[in-house]
Length: 172
Image (tube, rainbow, N blue to C red):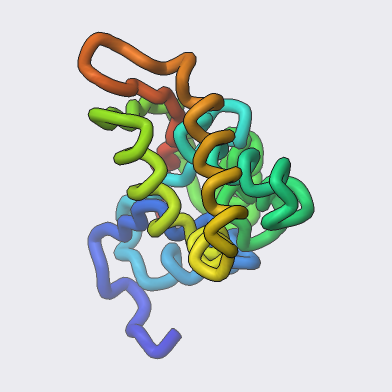
């Protein structure tokens, strides 16, 4: 809000739209500020089962009792727009046209399980807080479980953990 209508040729959002509690409203605002025919592109993470690089730490934290509940699939959660149909529905509700959602494979490469743990445990929002506030014993348990979970992704050069992003493209 506060921006003039038809002020922009394009709007791009990389891994942020899923954190908006009402994505259709955000997309509608983007459409409002686009010139007629302007383009929108937004990337989100696909659902949890398609992103072990994001979920191994969460599963380890849950199994050790460090956190509770399931993956964040509700409004504003990391995986809230994890299904292509959810992105398409939000774009339709916003009045966008030429809507397409593409699945894009991603890979998290890490030289070691230790590197993976250190990296993901500091970037994962609420999980980062839970890990930081855990006791040494709790962190050791989580780390050991993470190492077990990522072992299946070991290669000759380290870890290669798959995932998928979704990319929405549309026009205003």
